[in-house]
Length: 147
Image (cartoon, rainbow, N blue to C red; front, top):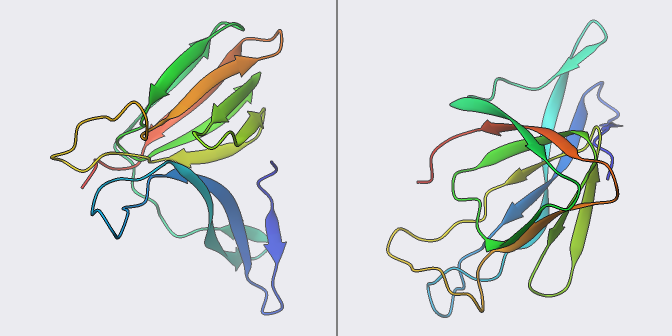
């Protein structure tokens, strides 16, 4: 999935990128299945430099995973922007959907549980796997702590 600005008529652009989240089920009040949605940020034109408003972050880490890496069902917890530098990361959902993210792609992982919830191995989370022969390098930027 490419993360490119989309042109708007009023000289503003937006940057759209995937968000991995876990919405609250309105019937139960509990965390539901992780899903992908899309979020848009406005980009302001500063003489040809298109930039979003400031986004605070707490820290960042560099990531390296071997080509056979696999992580079973888990949630991200704190909202984290993940920027893929090399390799391909596949994020799998419980409904069988998956998305592949390769060099240059980014997404926000913020699927989480409510503070008093325990992880349910039949409902919660996503998987993460490095696919292909190339190892994965990425940057993880923690945007905030779970509220």
